[in-house]
Image 1 (cartoon, rainbow, N blue to C red):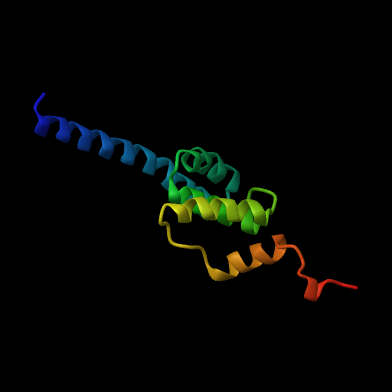
Image 2: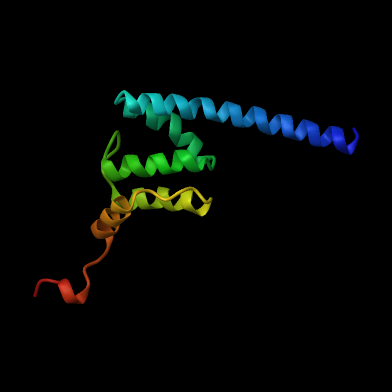
Amino acid sequence: MSGLAAIFVAVVLTLISTLAMSEPFEEGVAAANRGDYATALRLWQPLAYQGDASAQSNLGLMYATGQGVPQDYAEAVRWYRRAADQGHASPPAWVIGTAWFQTAPPSRSNRNK
């Protein structure tokens, strides 16, 4: 196989795998929009573990808000960080602020005496 043909095959395979991954993601968006968070989680979780930054960010939001999962700010930050490490746009500042406030240890200046 010539170099040009090998590149063409690689591009086609990449496009096919991208399209295959986008379908479950979009189905997850539709599920979340109708309030079916269990289905959204089932569809996004494998994508997130495979490195899909959008799915990782959406799992972060689910954990931050407690939609379909127990609310867990530390887990939300972990998922947001995975997405951010890939250059995904950050979540709203209030989400990160709330997550930090809920998980950060109290400082000496604001501890009850």
